[in-house]
Image 1 (tube, rainbow, N blue to C red):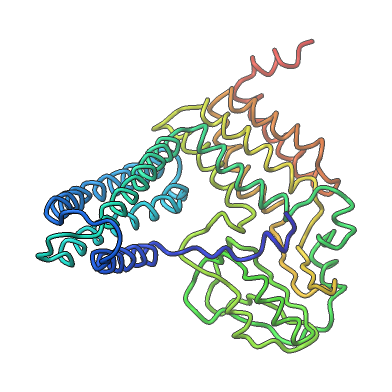
Image 2: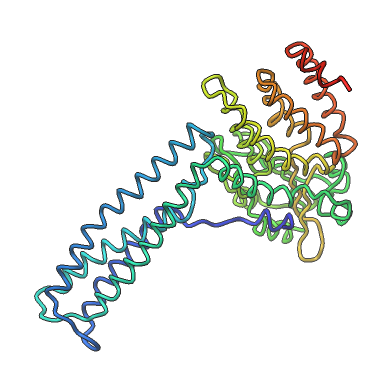
Length: 409
């Protein structure tokens, strides 16, 4: 995935909008189908009784959906991390709920629209059965999704997969990708040296909010129209505070409203564009497992194994910013990324401290850092060596016998 694709806004149909669509579709079908006078006709009495019974019985399906939602969300928050929202945000949850509402409304509306007719179109019964079959399929998939959402291996694999897709775009390890201009090598100063003169700075005028996504297509159009370069000093996942600079405009003049309109904000971080949220989630799972209340070092080791794979991408890339080109291969948007030190501070350092109570986790943490030394860029190796020395000192103080056994030939 290229950086431009990774930064393209993912538009989701909100839960309320999907439910409203299901309600309106059910209302329209419930009014239209009983009014059909041509084609096969069936006695209205048995059909209305069946449709009414199915419509009222589907209220139990709504209770089932909410029960699964509350159960899985509570389980994930207490067992893994409160920031884990994979099941809550899964489209199948709200699509199933919307279909259930639509089917209930269709059933009740069709009964009312039939009135005292002696016959009604067979399309009413066919539509009811088809929608009921579709709902049964969605409910089965929803239950399977709920079961996987409470399994440790499935959760870790899902978080790692989502994080890998974003990190592969933002931190390409190949030198060719960096030389092609997709990633600005070196520090932030290197990225700034090639920019035109600074014309203006856009500040955040609203209450604090989390930068969830960057609508890169909208921002590219605004920057291209002004022949400017827009530099975003904060990557998605950062909390924007009132009065803080959220963009620097170089070259031309881009209206502040155009820049702010391209920033999608919310109350919590999301996995769509956030380069470090998957790392944070895996670290949270490991930290929760190492807490005295849980004391499950094996779970922590499993999370560290997935974390090691993800950390290899920013460790191997000397990237400071993502440069996004327009169709004419001109840099129009620069998004600065979290540096390697920041990545280590937010994901590894707390785990290093927590691992001191478990020899198994301590050994796995050492293995993680040693493996990161292999692909690590030269500028990043010092930070890894520093933390390895930290681990060695604590091991010598806490587990001297294990240290001697490890050092003996």
